[in-house]
Image (cartoon, rainbow, N blue to C red; front, top):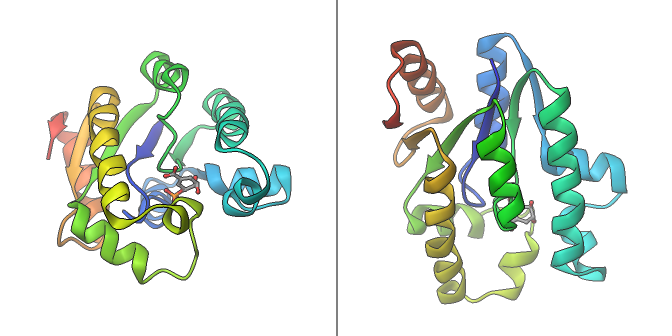
Length: 174
Ligand code: S3P
């Protein structure tokens, strides 16, 4: 099973991805963690010295590597679809793309309560972040095979829903 999770910062992609991989008894890779392993800096640390464009370039290289190497579940960074070429890569891949959707307010609340500071959080006001969230919705939806509404659900519930939906062969919205 080849699955990649996409969605905005704070939606829980890493937690849900690792739980999903456990349930499916398959491999799990987190692209932000791969970045840290390869570069030796968190995305936040990297972007405080280098540009976002440089970060996106490395992030895309890591995406390409993992799409060709891993058999299992990938969790991505929230901006993975920023480059049009990355959107194209996902459309052309064999991975099932699952969009973890949530209301902006829920996302913002999680991010504010998260001490793992994200670079975009520190540079953008809440209204700029909302604009970014809106822009990204279109990208996530244009690439996703399946959209899961995560509002008010625990990671365990979301994982069960993903598995149930995939077994039933339903798609688009759950
Ligand atoms: C980013 C999200 C982060 C990380 C980087 C940029 C973004 O990942 O890749 O800081 O542009 O939304 P998470 O979505 O795991 O926070």
